[in-house]
Length: 169
Image (cartoon, rainbow, N blue to C red; front, side, top):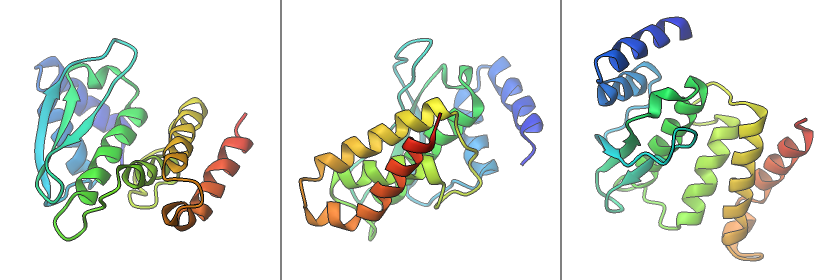
């Protein structure tokens, strides 16, 4: 993927205030589409320096990914990882594939932001963001319950996350 070209397209969308179209362009360009995806909608902006995206909809039903209008004011690699995180939730909530436990869904999504197993085409984020996302993954792992079946299921990935965090400067 030619990031220079992607940025040119995104800037054109931004100039015309076509933020939802820009987001659609990204999921198409980076092959993140899924049949359980109902589209994008707007959510309230947090601040000029932080963003929140959410996948909203009933478990087993279509999911709408809610994005802030200032989404494309942030680093493209970070934006792509945030969108990929939500698109993984779209898959996790799809009929026949539902992952009931929120902690499991979040652990998987933060793990994906670090290791890009489901979406290898998504670029890496800064070490700062890797540490942050790694910390979030470990937080959701802890919430699964001490020595629970879920923790046992993800013990190997937890070790990978810890190793990554410990090797970052």
